[in-house]
Image 1 (tube, rainbow, N blue to C red):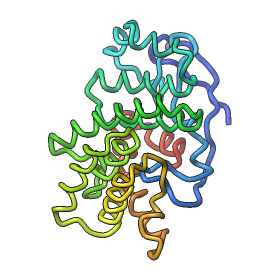
Image 2 (image 1 turned 90 degrees about the vertical axis):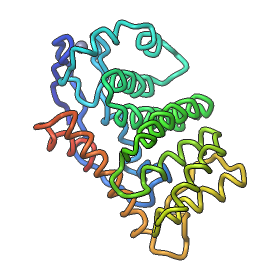
Image 3 (image 1 turned 120 degrees about the horizontal axis):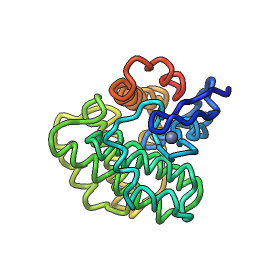
Length: 254
Ligand SMILES: [Zn+2]
């Protein structure tokens, strides 16, 4: 479905292919990346103005503090870096902007989404770098005692996967032990225990939440973590876009 978008930074009007609807069937990855079909809709999660290259989930919403950041070398060089798919650079630039105004959870998610696009492009080294950046941001938030996913332990479970897949197993183990030493139950405990096993085996590959306990009901496990992820998304989107929440939530399938 095509829609017309007005860039909040420069006023340019462009056509954007909006996602009408999607569904998902199967277990998300340990880092909450959804199964197909939603898995392949990332192009609809983020926008880039073709005139001024403002990158955001909704480019109609512009914060004046972004203007200077968009002129800086880090932003411009990312857009010009041919090693990265365009979609990846869009997510990374959105992360740079979010971080510049202290929207760290949003920045972390954007870096993680950039990593997912790099997985698809089979650029493992660059994906590890993006996961590392996501992990650093998420860890900083957690250090301040402010989880970015509501479900207790889910933030730590997510950062653990970012660290493991970034090749930073020892740091992930510290996070895992800190949570397992607390009153941690259910799917979160299973995920963290599974992560610990993967790290001990030197495994840095993609794995599914459904693998955490093949003897339990996968749907229940999936739904628990997915609910947490979606609540995180909804909270983040509410903060970013306010009254346009219904449009954006429909867009990303919430
Ligand atoms: Zn623009």
